[in-house]
Image (cartoon, rainbow, N blue to C red):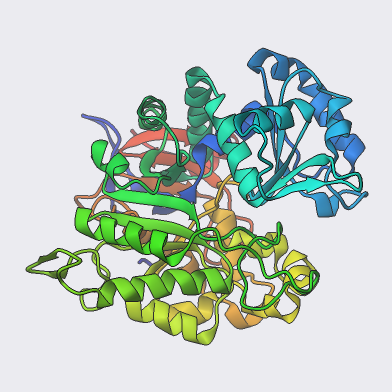
Length: 506
């Protein structure tokens, strides 16, 4: 990409204004890109409660109590980033413990991985009222058989959708604006925005898309629906996002080929069958839309790969063709639609070879390894020695697989500089990659994954004037901070405390 500071580049900052890059004391990189965010949830985290670093159920209650008036104002309370394993009690709070603080309105607290949650009695009643007489799978029960408020799998997914539908349009817009503003402070100019739920209405989609259009950062929306007609109605070129093929390691819902080390007999959950997934991929091929689906465990990734292989092998009568080959296929034409698998964390050697053969793009999150990787964290607890096979970036890159960096915010914060550092400083030294490769994950490779490389991802004549100014080279310096962010020639963020790194003559 480049080896030294960019000099002699004229950066357009307005119709008649030009800044000379030689006047910059900081280190310039292309505008950073986060290819996988959930901006609505990231913004809601700022509006509601954040349970990150909570160390006990009493502290969870305290944080809820501090936001009680907000809960009453909104008619609900959301909270994010709860890590039950880090609480002194080593468990989720029970709904009765949430009722002690906020009994009047529904409360919904997401586990840090976004694949399980706990709700209070009002929230549980809300969920059960939608399915009278039916108890969805995944609703934990106590020794007396009564629901504890902990929700996993199908019960969690149903409840999460209900709470999303309760959000007022102005709340959605405010949350998206907050997420965009926060992303700009982290040097980000473009995000892959994974939004919505399966039963989102067109009116709700419009509110979300209008909110994204008003963000500080450029957004590439992925509408999370299995219905291919929805993105087509809104003129989009991509579909899906975190369409769940499985869950997560932390909630023990990621689909594994062998059982969890800390739960013998439990190998996770298969959320969809081959027929549904293959139908989705075929519809995308016919519509010439890029797809992205969520698969974390090796059994889930194998299912996605298997269905892509079946798509390629489909008779031409099943998949429309063009002069360029099979529309939406992967092998033979280099995956022209750039179909993605999100996360793809646990991979065997044969799976890596099959992914490379198909030309699939992986949307990966290096910060996950910082949070949960290594021999003494959650991955090792859940997977045993298989922690050594999580997120094998070195092996993937050596096989020619393109890796697009992301955060999965709010699961981990939008922060590409931290993501670059996490990719380089792996707890598993066998999968270490270079600083240059890590930077590419959050610039050129991310732009490619979003089909935006013609406008961003590198500093070249004719491309959007997206740049990020840093205090030092992120490829080699762990203490690298964001000085300023420029999107399309306009400054969207400037850290005045670091003004000595951004002397611009305008």
